Image (cartoon, rainbow, N blue to C red; front, side, top):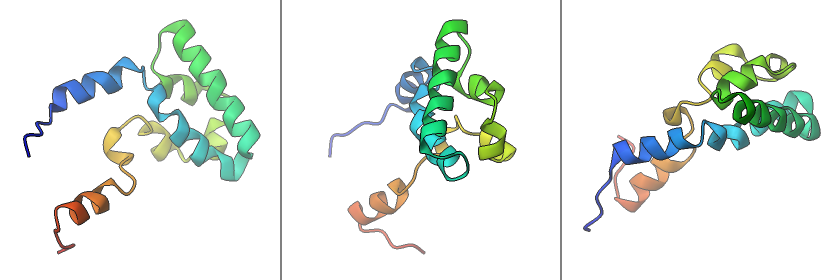
Length: 102
């Protein structure tokens, strides 16, 4: 009660990270095919490239050697879309609000 969601502010906060907030997701997607160490290395390189050239993290990751081997292009192209990174949030929201999965 009394909670107000400011979706524009939330989006601005996400954008302020340059997309690096999705780095953990990238590691989790890359690790099964590349191994955890290589996935973390690739993501770290993409973060450095992103910050150094002022490009979004997703673009830097797409240009990283090996990323396409570990993440299907459709997923890689949408890695920085928050709606695709909700995980269990919707299930938890429904539980908290006592809504069914109708």
